Amino acid sequence: MKKLLVVAGVVLVIAASVGLAGCSNSAAPPLPGNAVTIENHGFSPAVGSVKVGDTVTWTNKDSTQHTVTIGDVDSGAIGVGKTYSYKFETAGTYPYYCRYHPSMVATIVVQ
Image (cartoon, rainbow, N blue to C red; front, side, top):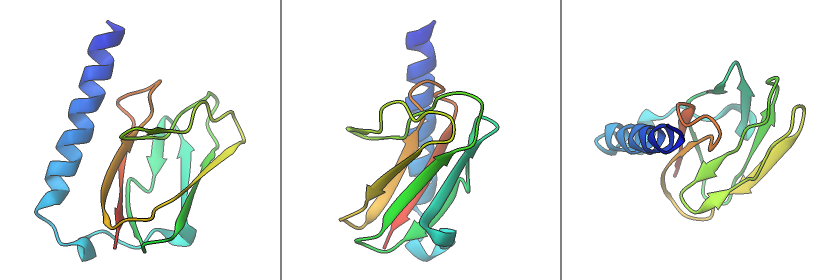
């Protein structure tokens, strides 16, 4: 069952990236303060854009641990009230998800 959830999460991440593939990078709104909030088992905002070289910070305001998993990059467990930051060095579309809760998906567009 756990493998099925992981596979489903990966499929959702791929679907999200394919959905944005036809959009220009300007279609993603700027990520306010380069910050993402994790709460209610979701990432907010779910889509946002930053500039090459920007650092995005995720803050876990949920009641359980989460991860930010972007391809081969994984934050490890982000505890309740904790943060994780990642610097985006290359332009592109970066779908990500929570390894513990694969239905939690979002996307950062780096311009």
